[in-house]
Image 1: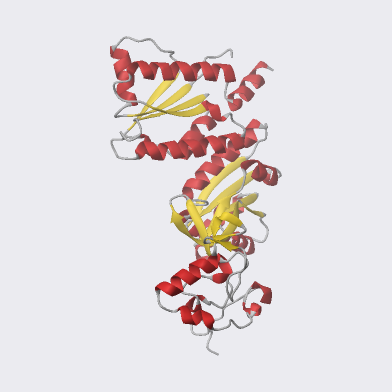
Image 2: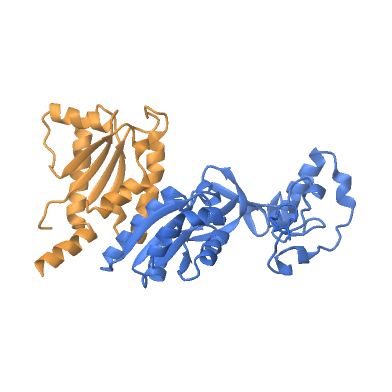
Length: 143
Length: 226
């Protein structure tokens, strides 16, 4: 992969976003490939958001919500879990590797875990190569 | 409600590949309630189709719209402009909706995006179950409001077959024996004696076997006074 992957992280305000903040306060380095988007809860995630992210060319998407049973809105993260699973299925049918999308659960105290998640996904996406839609564009430019 | 299920993206892609501008049309009725063909599903499927076409280097324009109901002309009219601009319509309605769109726009190819499965209910979140076969002559009153035609795998009207075991059907251990349900229900409402009456032969002409059905209500029709 010549270009660095672009990864979108949909982070819940109450956990993953705070964990990312904590990672920063702790001065822990993590790959700069991720673009964090704060949501009030991962229950705000819709399958269409996840599909459109890939349609627009991101290489990977992380959905990061609270620990199961710990959602600020009772069950938003459980809804996100089901929606992420559906999006993975539909992405696979459309021809995009489902491994590019994954949901993680963490708490606001999990700064180091947030960093681990970013590292894991960055390595995984680098191994998979660019989003097939971007790969097409890159090939055309090379030609 | 009418329960339907989404077709596979790759199957739809091959059906639609001959058309450049595709309108994915959702329906706000039953298929929205059963989470198969509403506005959300239109968004998801349109996105999936755009991705699938682009992965294969095919250029298509996929546009999205959802109307209140596809089985009524009044609502179909609202979408006239969008349909006329499209080379094909992928309807995410039940079979009735797909045909209603096709009848209204005779020059536009219309394809189904869903498989229409049955008339049923939401049993629990994520599980829909068939309850009615639309046989045309309801017998629920005789069987304690449990439909023998739908709930019994063999559609038997005069009692269970030999394949009923511990309340389950021989067809599958996941399937309840319809006749066990009928018996339990009739016992609970104190009408077991009704089951002693032999069931008459079914008049299948009232069902689909009698041809495409139509209900005409003169009291509702608008007639011109001559």
